[in-house]
Amino acid sequence: MAETPILEVTGLKTHFHTPEGVVRAVDGVDFTLMPGRTLGILGESGSGKSVTALSVMRLVADPPGRIVDGRIMFEGRDLLALSPAEMRKIRGGEISMIFQEPMTSLNPVYTLGDQIAEVFQIHEGMNREQAWAGATDMLEQVGIPNPESRVDDYPHQFSGGMRQRAMIAMAIACRSRLLIADEPTTALDVTIQAQILDLLLKLQEDMGMAMMLITHDLGVIAETSDDVVVMYAGEVVERLGIDTLFDDPRHPYTRGLLNSIPRLGEKFTRGKQPLEEIPGTVPNLIDYDPGCPFAARCGQAMARCHTERPPLFKLNPAHYSKCWLSEADAEGRAGVAAAG
Ligand code: SF4
Image (spheres, rainbow, N blue to C red):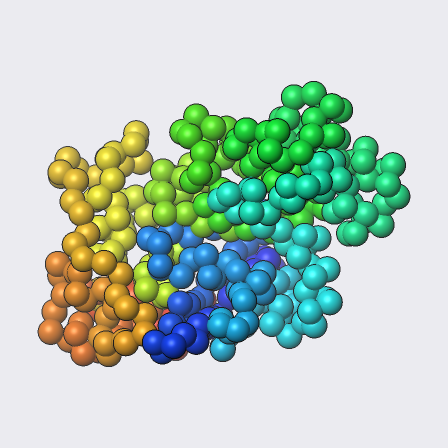
């Protein structure tokens, strides 16, 4: 029997109402995440990747934001149909999230022990003593030295890397089945970044959880992801496996991202062409052109690209590209001839 996705997002649209008009931050996003796997969501800032994550958690501030269409199925339940109380139970219990800057999530006036113990008390119904022991154990699991004494420390007494470890401890305390990590290493220096990524991968393996990892960094994607969704201007422009990302990317934007970074070891061995930058910036998400949102920056744009929006073409069951150049090689269109 085919495995069921842990998370299946279909036609997600999250818009923001501003005095200047409606900002279509997420505009028709589809992807699936299988149990135990890591899905990397790659894109520049403003591509809609963080709003996608906040939509899954139902944490988009309303107003000005609103999920206006789509479905978010988590283990067979439609998260958009749950009551606020049901959703609160899922957040931090079954799905947890970590952010770029842990200080935004940690409360500066409580010790780490208090904050982690609270997770156990709320979601597991533990008494204070059990919860405190659980908090100490979690700090040990995420590699914080002397957890018995550090559990009494406040967030400001930790370094950036240690705070991120503590945040991870809090996020996984209830053995969530899905961890959403939004730029979890961006604020850290390079050696600490590698340690945090290693920690996330080890915990994922130990606990069998699925991970949705949001980043602008292809190096992070290369280290962690099984499958990748490339986002641009609020849309998914390419969906593919990690090997295909480096061996056979089809969308000009994905190719541009790959060509704009230095080669980092074996995965970046696609010829010896010099680094290129993608000209221009992400388009205004209020006034849409009818054509491809990447047309103004695309070196391969054709006349039809400026007038007709490409659908997401299915190249094979694991590879989709939203570009007219993929039409000739496509088996069909996602959601039409070849949903999947
Ligand atoms: Fe470039 Fe056209 Fe493809 Fe858009 S549809 S990425 S403009 S070639």
